[in-house]
Length: 310
Image (cartoon, rainbow, N blue to C red; front, side, top):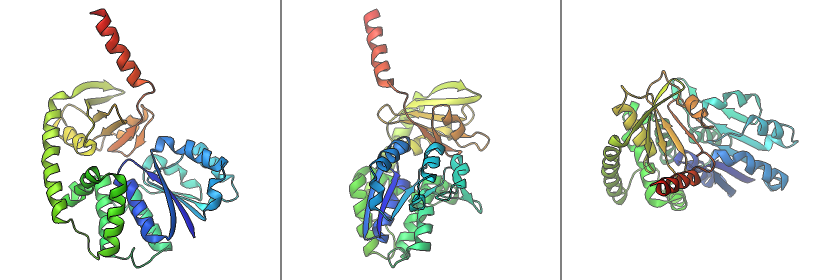
């Protein structure tokens, strides 16, 4: 069987399905992208008849628009697709036979990785997928992505994103494919532990540096703390939301080289709903959105005008 995977490039929850696929299938290809590019990519590949060469196409940790789902639903080979997503704002798309969106079950929040792993165990179980090392890594990814590591006190779930930052996407994937094939139990090596301890100190220093830089605004009934930052969006956003819990409902992180990120810690405020104001989506306490078109050019123009006016 020839398999193609499309997954989110943004974090370990999007990357781990690639690792799982390498363990599950012999004939396997993949493509990573941001969710904002998904519809465009699918339309292009459908027109090219790209998927004709594959027996199964998985989409993990992301979901197409309703319009794209309607288009795929008209295809005779629609059941070749299997979408596995956990963003609750996509729950309405469960009406399509090839889409499964699960945000929470029995009080536990799911992730793209955990849903994909469950699907693979049900349909493509093998000796690699049954290893304790694999199931434990999946649990760490889920705890990290849902931020439930803090609730359950599993700090190890913080470490995989740290290693991704050091390794880069390609090496990270290949490293864990090799590791999981060789090892029955999951662990971090001595060298990795040194890297992790060093980076944890850097993260905390970075957060402390950013605390005085927060700009406070209000929008659509939300009190917003805004910061310009490029690193550690989850750790930074959650720490700032806690530090300024009496002043803000949402932390907005502007990365001028990437995107907008939103974090919150208050159950009464829906971060994904706030992100939708910026054409974004996500979860109740974590979400993202694309940068406005032409933002960098507008910033440059503003700086030039300021200089010329002085």
